[in-house]
Image 1 (cartoon, one colour):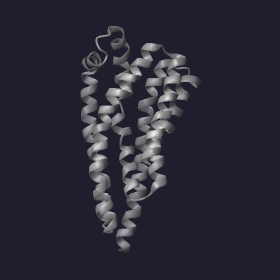
Image 2 (cartoon, rainbow, N blue to C red; image 1 turned 180 degrees about the vertical axis):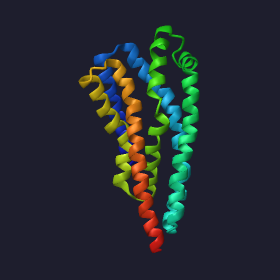
Image 3 (spheres, one colour; image 1 turned 60 degrees about the vertical axis):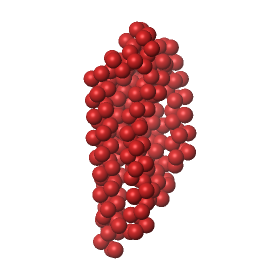
Image 4 (tube, helix red, strand yellow; image 1 turned 90 degrees about the horizontal axis):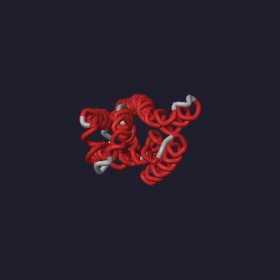
Length: 210
């Protein structure tokens, strides 16, 4: 799953850069580089930290057949991610211009393009990142197909599809590129909740049997 996630990120980068190349300019490509290389990277650090910290505990509880604890861990991990990434997202929204000035190296034209793009692109990142928590959870409980699906779902599947619809069908241009990201994040969160409910029911059943 980890390899698939990393590979899908590279493929998605190729897709979005080519789309921006069609409907945007070099400044928009540079703006996305700022968003993905700095802003989203920092947000992902929090999600990765939570995943890395909880995965060994999840594996241990699976081995000990402590299914009730697995349910609690799954829920608390997602909630911790929502809270931590949400706080950082708010800070980035409020300080978008200052952050872009820092990362854009003083290029005024790039700053003006990047600021609104950042504010749109990360609007729902705190929701979408939760699907990565579920990917790590499924990997820890050896449900590898689910781990791969949730790992590549946010960007390669949902973001790519929504972006193609917004840009080429709805004719939203470069705005559709940025707007597709929060829409996909919202859809990813819906998928996360549905998977959590399903997994919770499975664990509850296992717990009662045990």
